[in-house]
Image (cartoon, rainbow, N blue to C red; front, side):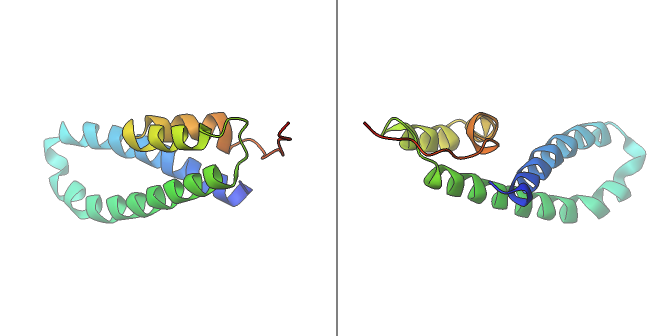
Length: 106
């Protein structure tokens, strides 16, 4: 992945963590109703777009990355879609942020 692609993925991860944390905090603040109503939809739309782009970039990286095992790509793809995001984060830190190396098949 290029530096720009890694940045998009990191922005998506950090943005989601901050959005959830601030959202939980804002729910407990009764006087922030108008502020929350005013900013939730634009921030949610931005995070959705960035997160969707991050998932597309990670799937593209999975497609381009060579693996030793022929079933590794399918396994990672299933993990990404069936674990509710945990597989996406794991794949990003285990493989996507590292450079792609050529694997010689024997």
